[in-house]
Length: 144
Image (cartoon, rainbow, N blue to C red; front, top):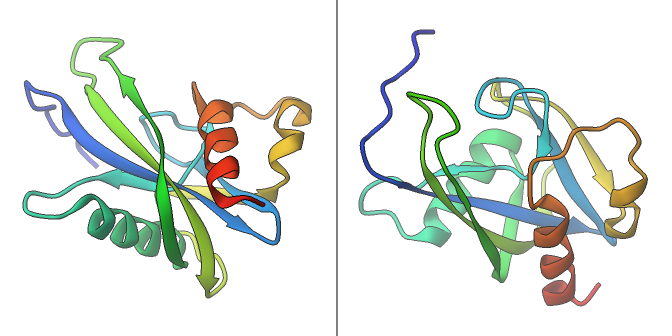
């Protein structure tokens, strides 16, 4: 797949810290950016789409899950690390799993439900920057 040229302006993206039975869903990126890193499902907001619409669409496309959005857990800015890399503002939301089992698309190659309290004990798993803070904030919003 040819790489697409990045826009010359920041892009808005969304992600979801999805909780089910006290655990949060981590997904591993199968492609760049962040290939091989565990993170939260999500992606770019399309023109004319609300943040919540984009979040539900991205979660459905990447994992097949249905969710209930609880609230904004935080945000993160990813600056271009190399020429041609993207600049993203990622709005991360706390959400509850409501239906279906994970069915990953080709953007992801692994998932795991993990206790938010065990994030520091995941051994050699590579986590995207700021992930632990977003998950802890989302955990407080969920009240789990």
